[in-house]
Image 1 (cartoon, rainbow, N blue to C red):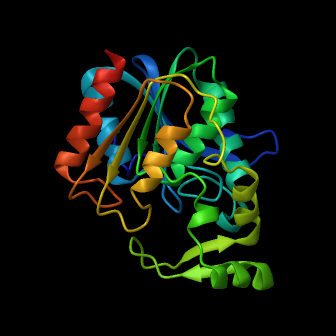
Image 2: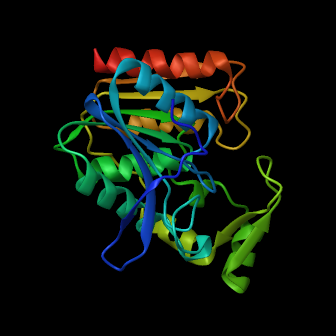
Length: 248
């Protein structure tokens, strides 16, 4: 089993900045894990999925966006456009054939943007507490005013000792990529997993997303006692079962 202690491979973008990744060979479709905001490819769900892929002989790509985890760059230099392009660059360079995208929180937003850019390759999507458009609904008027005036918003994080950092550039990139107020032109199978006790991404967001996607093969599973992370043993088992059914 690959662990977080194993050194990742590095791939240089055209500008020279190197992105960290682990690519596990196996049968397709290639599963691509997209981490959440201020997260990386060594999170509990990413590593659990890697262990599952090893057991099942499945191809899996997990990686860190620029400025995150083991990738080069500064976090504050990143934004939604840049991280989408990081994902596309790694996918296009390292994988061939059908893709199954798995996005957690902000990674669920990026999952949708990547799928829209590579419709011909995407065989399915699995969103875990997907958070599309959170720059629109996730900040108060006072917080947006701080972003506009100071260019940086620091907030306590429930998941790290370090404060959550949001730059004005990231917020503006989110506003350029809003999805929920229009039709999302995807017709691949989509599975959304969301906890009803999620205090970061309200579960009605998942309903809005399901309704916005044009395709009919969209299913939402609400976990009544689930939180934002959905990383308990039973939540991970649900994720595996969802992926297995999609692949089958």
